Amino acid sequence: MSQPRPDILWLRERDVVELVSLNDAMDALEQVLVLEGEGHAVNAPKALATWDGAASLHALASAVTSASAGGGRYCGTKTWINTPRGAVAIYALFDGEAGTLLATMEANAMGALRTAASSGLATRWMADPEADDLAIVGTGRQALLQVAAVAVARPLRRIRVFSPTREHQLRFATEVGSRFEARVEAPASLEDAVRDAPVVTVVTRAKVPFLGAASLSPGTHLNAVGAILPANAELLPDVLEHADAVVVDNLPNVKLTSREFIDFYGHPSRSWDAVDTLGHRIADGRPRASTDRLTVFKSVGMGLADLAVASRAFEAAKRTGVGAVIAAPVPAVPRWKVHAASVRQSKQVA
Image (cartoon, rainbow, N blue to C red; front, side, top):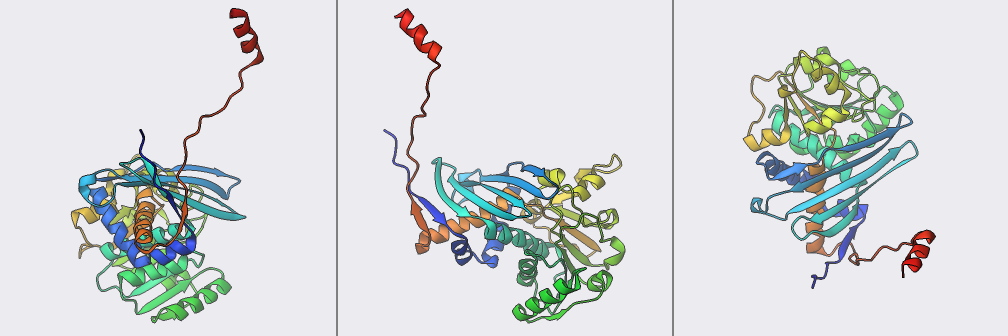
C-alpha cells in the first residue's frame, strides 16, 4: 500500500521576501555552490525559447544529489515567461528522496534575489577586500537589488549611478540615496561613472556592447548581469581579453545564452578552459589574487541559485507557519474513447 503524500505548501511573492532576505540568499547560495564544487549538486541545462525579438520562455532545474552532503535532498524547477507585456515565474520544489512535491512558489522575487545573490557572492570572493566604491550601470527593475548585493558584500562609501537616459538616472540615484548611507553620484558619462571604481555592476538590456577595457581601471571587479539572451551584449571583447580571472555562474548556460562569451571563447584561437565557475572557486577557497588587475563575473542564471533560495524559503516557512496548504495530488486514470471501427471488430470476433 502506497504511503500518503504530504500536502503541498503554496508561497506567494510576499511570503518569499518575508522568509528570505538578500543576506540569507547569499549565504544559502554559498552553501549550495560548495556542494556543487564537491560534486554533491548539479544543474540541468537551461531550456530557452525566444520569439518576436523580445519574448522568451525559460526553464531551469537543479538537484542536491547526495544525502551525505547534509540537509535536505532537494531538487526543483523554475519556469518563467518574459514578454514586453508581462513576466511571471513559478517554482516547484521536490523531495529528491521521497519523490514528492513539497512546495510551489511565485518566483519573480526569487529570481531577483538569486540574481543579486550571485553578484553579491562574486563580489565577496572576487573584489578587492578594501573596495568601498560601486558603479552601477543600468537602472531597471534589477538594479536596486544589485546595489544592495554589493552593499552586503562590502561596506560602500560611494555609489555612482549611470543610465544613458538622464531622467532614469536621476530618479534611480534619488532612490538609491534614500536607501543607502553612501554618497550617491550621477555622473554625466559612462567613463566618469566607472573610472577608478573597484566594483562595477552592469545590468542592462543592451543589444550593442558598450563597455570596453579602456574604461575600467586596474583593480576593478566587474559583475556582468544583463545580456542573458543571445541577441543582447554589454561587454566589448577586449574586456574578456584583458581579464585576469573570468568566472561564470554556470558554464553550459553561458555557452547557450551569452553572445559575448560565445563570440569570444567560441573562436578557434581561444578555449573555454579559461573560464572558471563560481562554485569551483568557492569550493577551492580561492579569493581574489593580489595581482589581479581585472576580474569578471558573468551571471546568466542557473537552477542551483533558484534552489538555494527556494529551499531556504521552504524551511523557514515550515518553522514559522507562513504560506497556504494545498492538497497533495491524487492519482487518476486517464480516459479514452476507442475508434468506432475497433468496437465493431470486437463484436464480430465475439
